[in-house]
Length: 139
Length: 139
DNA sequence: ATTATACCAGACTAAAATAGTCCGATATGA
DNA sequence: TCATATCGGACTATTTTAGTCTGGTATAAT
Ligand code: SF4
Ligand code: SF4
Image (cartoon, rainbow over all chains, first blue to last red; front, side, top):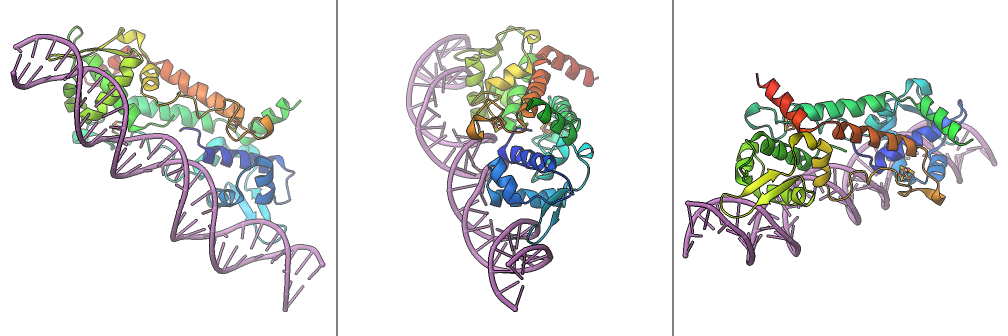
């Protein structure tokens, strides 16, 4: 799980959304401006975020996006997994890869554990916690 | 830090080397056969491993590679970092990237912490520990 | 109604990273 | 002197990432 701009964009954008007052939809144009993310790319990312039910949309003029759940019920892992093209753990041992003669390689368990470690980290942080930290830093 | 075949090859190869009886050099041909890794690619990887002083070489016929240190003094992070083209953490917040107006992005600290988590994991496991686990599994 | 705004969908392209190959050297034990 | 092995680097191919482009649809405001 390396930090790609896609993942950073996704989390920064959703966090920007979560930081706005609830109730009114936030347009991608706003987020694009504040977070310096190309609008067209943001649209592509939010399509996936909506499909994964991280956000919901309001169409038409004055439209935009809203979080589907409370910030305390969404984790970093939810957001990152949503924009993923394949599954988040597809690089990790699943019994295939270059396994010869159906035998796992020497380090199979290590990669499984690393995968679990990263997932636990990302899943252990809610958007609410991130917001709290960000607000705290600004003072 | 995603699991690439380069990293997996590197660790499997070094582990294969560490599993052989100490004292005599192990040729890449052997490792290539046992671990099903293309020989030419293995040569490229071991060049880096040598430069990083993870292994040392014996040239000529009956030559090969040896670990520079005891397996208890080498960690997974040492091996993975050795084959890296750039630094291991170059994807993580270093104050640049798409930082606008010299301000870190909203999630800078999160990525720093993730980076630290992964590094601690990789650095906390020695080759000796891996070998012990592998031997244990086989029974 | 018309228009401006914004979401929606997917095909397309460009750039970067990854995964290798190829060629020709050099060292050394048999 | 020959077979085996490390060395060095340039080269290519493939895959992934990072975006763009085009055209459509929904809806609030004028
Ligand atoms: S056993 Fe090794 S080679 Fe096979 S999927 Fe797991 S990590 Fe990859
Ligand atoms: S502050 Fe954000 S954008 Fe800048 S280097 Fe760190 S993670 Fe990347």
